[in-house]
Amino acid sequence: MSVSFKFKARDQETGVQTKTSFTGDLLPDIVDQFADFLRGAGYVFDSLEVSPNNWRVNPDETPSPELLMEKILKDADDTVVNFNHQELTD
Image (cartoon, rainbow, N blue to C red):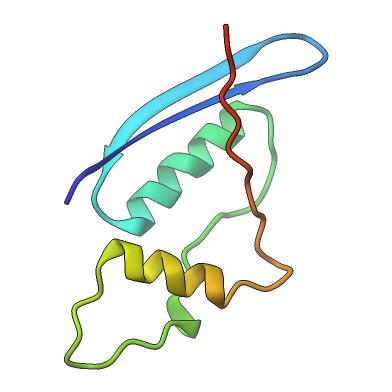
């Protein structure tokens, strides 16, 4: 399953916009692309990683991306940064 992503950020002080779009299949690849976007928008951090240590999936279950995202959000703690979606207009 391939999912299309589009991200846009605008610096509130300078008005500079950063945009990216990509398609992704695997969560680690999507996170890598998103980390590149954040760096391009001026954020500085060591790494942004997928940490599946808290995921509990039955051995005979093939989880869907929706199920994995549900598990990530359910197990989230205060080390997780939540993003609010807001449509930016040009």
